[in-house]
Image (cartoon, rainbow, N blue to C red; front, side, top):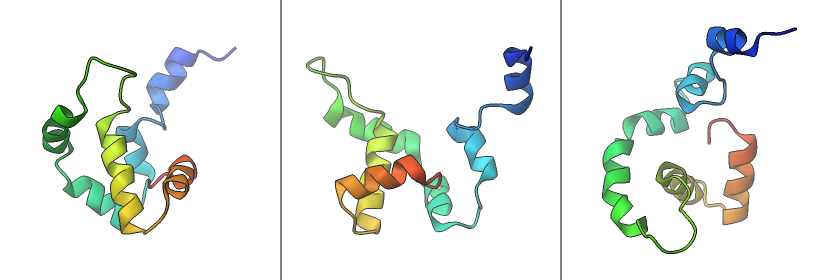
Length: 91
């Protein structure tokens, strides 16, 4: 029987953003852009436009901002950027 707690502690979680970055090519332009952006400041600034007690909670702002940027950088549709996000670890 596998002890999941020990296994996860030793390997980390591949799907955590801070862990996934270790496996990506650090000279990829998307990685360079992601590391160059001050995400905390950008999220703090944009939060006032998305903060509301009404309706469904928003998705994480970093995801919304990042996917919007990728959509315009690569000139792709909403559907295409979401499909790429699901399949491409660089997104």
